[in-house]
Image (tube, rainbow, N blue to C red; front, side):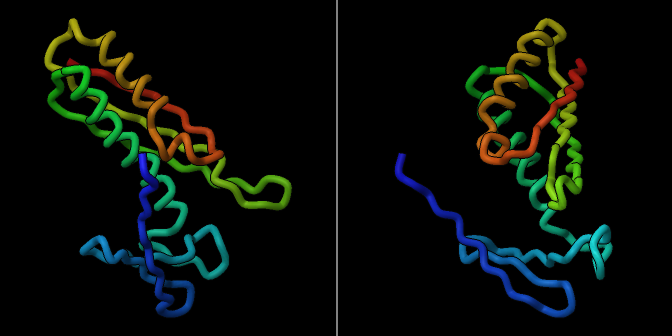
Length: 143
């Protein structure tokens, strides 16, 4: 596969706030230092939120591809994510991202297969594989 590049531009606005955009996308996202840090701003996306969102959204898109290839019939997929920020040896690190997917499948007989598909999704998620943070999954499968 040829390398792909994803372009993101940043423009500082004021104080601890900026805006990210991409020539490839329509929407802009306001970003800021998060509240745990000095002069952090509540209610605005932070780099820590975006990292957590990147893992979560990659998990979803990977799941959709794996489920389609596996012909798994499901009715809904939701996933909550929690990114853990810690200070270790004087450095701030996002040490863990906990994913909590909830999958509603059509047939109870597919429960074990659905669990294997979620495990395969975890192993194949390129963003999770690209970061040094631990990625943990606690899945719920309903039918």
